[in-house]
Each structure stands twice: as structure tokens, then as C-alpha cells.
Length: 317
Ligand code: ADP
Image (cartoon, rainbow, N blue to C red; front, side, top):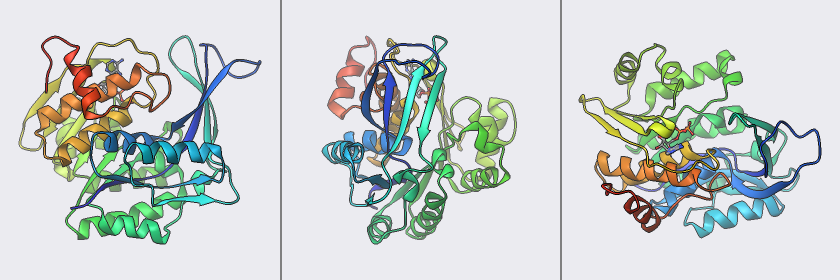
């Protein structure tokens, strides 16, 4: 029915080489690494051979070029990435603290990422797409919300499907507008991919079983629960529960694991794989990605994920 598409921020990430607190003294930084949750998602989707495209905006600068070149090289449709003549590409400076939490300096709201628009190329991509993946991070960008609404209507009208990764920054959930958008997505998404507390926020109830049931009572037919180093579980509306243990890895940089997991799961399901197989690839994609520095540096092709899976005795697809 056409490519999987997503809408939202493309950024570069520039990260501190050591763990510590903040950016108040000179430290060594490395990057630029291609980033932005929707970009990571669509890159992993494309690398797995899923037809995939993104609607986004970058600046007329090297940070934009590095992102577009990466996505193109990995097979994503970049025709709907526009270029702002005025604003620089969005960026995130990141430093991990010793306890694993992170300090950020973001430039998103006043960057090209926020200049996203429903261009003719974006309309054309939406018109031929068969699946929309909405990332909660896009709710921070007013222009993206409008495009998401247009895409929802168009894709639903074509009989396409919708997935939702709640991934909303906590501060934004305090706003009633964001909560309403969130609730709307929960009401129309076929597949929801929450991580940790996001399940309860999405469902509006506590308790894993209760929350999953509440989502099935809305619209979802599948819920893929991400559990970090504890793997993941898919629940289906028919009452199936498929658990997938994590692949044991040394965690170098956890940023992007959930986005790679989502990109792999959606790509594999849309390629026609059964849940078990798609979930194994999704866990492998998430785990492989945390072994590499940089938010999408560990995204894998099918051959790379097969090789990664084969390194764990007893695991296969
Ligand atoms: P999010 O980034 O959305 O919070 P998670 O951290 O749960 O998502 O990561 C998504 C998936 O990536 C997990 O379900 C798991 O399969 C894999 N993953 C993440 N962190 C690790 C880890 N430390 N070891 C192994 N697998 C991991």
C-alpha cells in the first residue's frame, strides 16, 4: 500500500566524550551524529528494506547535509525533506552523567526542524504512503502537528495503518493541548509502542494488564511494550502475549534504542513477518544500537541484524 512515513525533527547530536555534569567548562565533544527520533526510526526502517520516507526540514548547512546523505544512503525517501534558507539544522548537545541521566542543550524550536511545512513534496509522499508512524516528540513542533493531521486523514482514507510511539517529553505532558493530542493518537493508532511509564500515561490507568486492556478498548490491535535491558512484550487484542528477552550487550549509548526498535518492528510487520520474528529483529535493532556511540550509528541492515542475532547462542529468527 506504499511506504511507511514519519514526520518530525531531524537533528544532529554532538556528545561529550566523557561522563560528567553539564557543559559549564570546556570538554571534548564529538559529532555531528545524525539524529532526531523520527529520523532514527525511518533510518532503521529503511535499512531493513522497508519502503520508508520522512517529512522534515533541515538547514542549508553541513548538519543538514550529513543527515540527508545518511538517510538517502540507507534507502529512505528524502524527497519530502525541505531546506530552510534561513534557519540552521536542529541540534542537541548531550552529556551523560555518571548515573546514566543526561544533560541537554537543544536547538529545535528556533531551528529548521520547526520550519517543517506541508509542501507539495510532503503531500505527494503522504498521498502514496500506506503507514504513518507518529512520534510524540513531534508534538513539540506546531508545524508537524498540522502535517500529522493531514497524513492521518489521507492514510486512513486509503485503508492504511497508524502506529504511535508516545515518547513525549514529560514537561510537555503537563500541557492540556499535548495531552489531548496524545489521547487522539491513542484513539486512532493500530499499534502503540510505549516504554515504561508511557504505557500508563497512554492508557490513563496503572497496572500493566489493565493498561494494555484499556488500549485495546480504544483502537489498538497490537501493543509493543519496550522494557530496555529487559527486552519487550507484544500484546494482541486477541489475547496473545509474546515475550522477547533482550540480547545481552554492553550499553555504550542508549539514545535511539526505542526508535530503532520501532523502526525495525514496523518495517518487519509491514514486510509480512509474524509478530515473533518482527519482535526478534526489533530487540536486536534496539540492542545493537546501544552498542554504538551516536543515536543511529548502530541501526542495522537485515544481514547485520542476522549476524548480530546469531552471536547469541540459541537465538534466531
Ligand atoms: P526507549 O528508548 O523508547 O525508552 P527502550 O530503552 O526500552 O526504549 O529500548 C527499546 C528496546 O531496545 C528494548 O525493548 C530492548 O529490546 C532494546 N534495548 C534497549 N536497551 C538495551 C540494553 N541495555 N540491552 C539490550 N537491549 C536493549
